[in-house]
Every structure is written in C-alpha cells, then in structure tokens.
Image 1 (tube, one colour):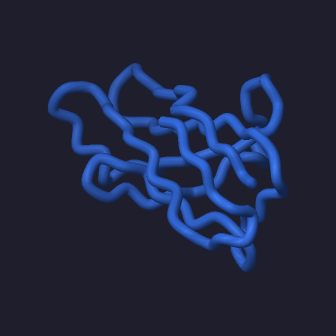
Image 2 (cartoon, helix red, strand yellow):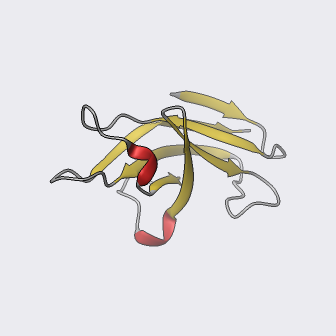
Length: 97
C-alpha cells in the first residue's frame, strides 16, 4: 500500500487485513496506527477502525482524531482474532502533501 493525499483532505484510509483461515474478524477490534517514526506504534498512537469487506477503515484528516501534517508516514494494522495469534503488521506507507 502506497497512498498520497493532500493535508487538506478528510477521507477514509483503507488498509487490507488478513486473519487466520476461517476466522471472522468482524467480531474483533481492529486498530490502525499512522506514525512518522520507524518504531512500533505506542498504545496512544492506535486508533479504533471499522472492518469492512476485508479492509480496516479509518477516517483521517482535518476535523478527525487523526489530522496529519505534511510528511511521510508508516501505516500499521492490528487485530486480535481468537486463538494464539495477535496480528500486528506494517501495512504500507502514506504520503501527505
């Protein structure tokens, strides 16, 4: 995933997510983090996201909880389905112009 948006845009960021085979992820919280650093996201950087058609969806931009300045960001996704797995992955990059 590599996306570019203007800093003035308010829109949904769509992040594809896969879980274990046969797991229905819609019953479990999905989180997205958009960070400008190279470390793993901290607890406060995670935002609750909607899961729609296999994608985590998070509204970003002016007027939302996640207003981004111009720059380059890493996008992370996390879901905790049933079983031993707790999935956290870097999902791509976001450029804000």
